Image 1 (cartoon, one colour):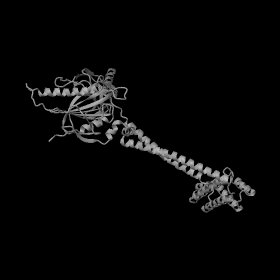
Image 2 (cartoon, rainbow, N blue to C red):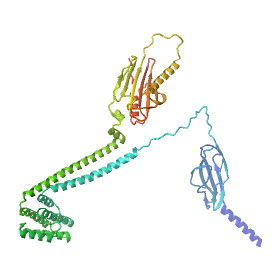
Image 3 (tube, rainbow, N blue to C red):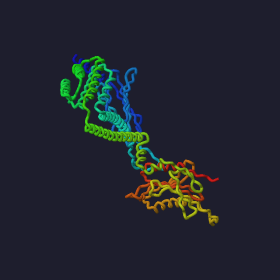
Image 4 (cartoon, helix red, strand yellow):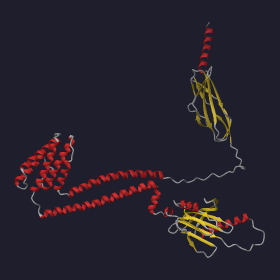
Amino acid sequence: MIKRILTFFGVFVSLLSWSQEGGTLLVAIDSTAVKIGEQIDYILQVKADSTAQVIFPEQPLFAPFELLEASPVDTLKTQSHYLYTKKYALIQFDSGDYFIPQQQVLVNGFSKIADLIPIRVNTVVVDTIQQKLYDIKPLQEVEKNYEALIAQVLWGLVIALALIGIFYTYLFQKRRKELREKELAPFDRAIEELKALENEQLSAQEEYKNYYSRLTDVVRRYLEEEAKIDALESTSEELLLKLEMRKNAGTLDLDQKTLMSLRAVLQNADLVKFAKSMPEYRIASEDRKVVEHVVIETKEALPEPTEEELREKAAYREYLAKKRRKEQWIWGLSGVGILCLLALVISMLVYGFYPVRDTLLGYPTKGLYSGEWVMSQYGSPPLKIETPEVLERFEQTEKTIQQFGLGTFDSPFYIDLLFDFPPRDTQKEEGPPADPKQADLEKGQALVNSIISNFESKGAVNILMKNDAIEVPSGTPVAKVYGTLDYPKKGASERVRCSFNALLFTFEEGTIILTMMYEKEDRYAPQIEQRIINSLELIKEL
C-alpha cells in the first residue's frame, strides 16, 4: 500500500514539474552566410500554453555581433497553444567565422537555453580590373560658420539699443522739463503749476492726496524762494506762525483774510493727506484759487528787488540757459550715436555682417565687387568681357600681341588679357605633316610654360598648378590652368598666398589668354572671378 502511494506521488510530482516548465524554445536565423555589413535576423520563439509566463532577455549579449534593433514580443494564438516570438537584427563589419552566443529565455521561471549558431561573414569581392581603387581622401578643414552666432548677437543688440533708446527718451524729456522749470522765475513757475492743477479730474482719495500735496508744495516753494521763509521744512502751524511774524515785522504785508484762507487750505490738505479725508471737488477747486491768490498777493507785498539782486538773478538765469544748451548738445549727440548704432546693427541684419563691415572699412575687393561694372570688347577676334573697371591697353614691341590689364600683381585683384595672333606663314614647310594631337600638346605645354615663366619673372614661388577643360556659359570651350602661388606683395612682411586662374582660348591662328590673380583668403575675389568668367563671349567675325 505504501509503495503504491509513493508511486502515485512520484507521478504527480512529474506531472507538476512538466506543467511548470512546459514549453519549447525554438531558434531561427535567416542565413548562416552573409556579407560584411549585411543584416542578420535572429529569431527566438517559445511554444507554450496560455498561462505560461515567458520572459525574453532584457539586455541580450550578441558579441561579437552588434545589435541594431530588437522588435517587441509578438504573440500568436493557435488552436492548442501560443507562440511567443522575439526578433533581433544583428550586423558584423569584419569577415570571418563566428558564433551567435546562446540566449536564455525564462518560461514559468525555468531557464531555456538556445543553441549556438555558426555564422560565416564573407568579404566583398572587388574587381580591381573593372573598378578603380582610390586613395583615402585627406581631411578637409572646414571653416567655422559664425553667421548664426553673429545674427543672434545683432538681434540682442537691436533689443538692447531699443530699450536704451526708450529709457534715454524718458530721461531726456524729464531732464528737459527740470531745466526749463529752473529757468522760469519762481512766480511764473508757481502760476504755471497751479494752472496745471486746474485741469485735474479728482475721484479717488489717492488722487485728492496727490492734488493737495502738489498744491501745498507750490505755495511752500514759492514762499521759500521769493519770501525767503523756511517753508518746505515747516509744519502748517509753523509756516503760518512765520508769516504772522513777518507781517507784524512789516517785511511782508499780507492781508489777514488771506492768511485765514491759507490756514483753511493747509488744514484741508492735512486732513486729506493724514486723515484720508475726501472733500468735495468744489472745495478743492476753491483751495487752488486761494493758493493762487496767496502767491499773487505775496509777490505784490514783497519789496522791489535792488539792482544787485536783479543782476544776480539775470546772471543765474544766463548760467542756467548755458547749462541747458550744453546738456542739450550732450543729449543730442548721445541720441544721434544711439540712432547711428541702431541703424548700423539693422543694416548688418538686412545685408549681412561682413558686407556692411567691409564697406565701412573699405575692403579692397568689396568696392570692386559692389561698384559699377563695365561690359566691353577687346582685341581681335573681339572678346566680350565684363570687368569692375575698364581694362587698360599696354603697348607691346611685337605688333602681333595685344595686351590689356587691370592692376598689377600687388593689386587686390589682377587681370591680364593677352591676344597672340602671329601672321600666317605663306611658305609651307617641306616634309611630312606633323601629328595634330602632338602639335596641340606641344602648343598647350608651351602656353603653360609661358604662364609659369610670367609668374616666376615677377618673383612668385611655390607654384602649384592644375589644368582642366571647361566650357564658359556662352558655350565656348576653353582650357583652364589654375592653382596657387606665393608672391612677395609690397608692404607685406612675408609672401602672400595667392590663387590664380588662366583661361586659354586656342585657335589655329593664335591664342587668347585671360589671367586673374588675387589673395587666396580674399572674401570677394572668387565672386569677382566667377562673374568675369560668366560674362565671357567670343564674338565671331562675319
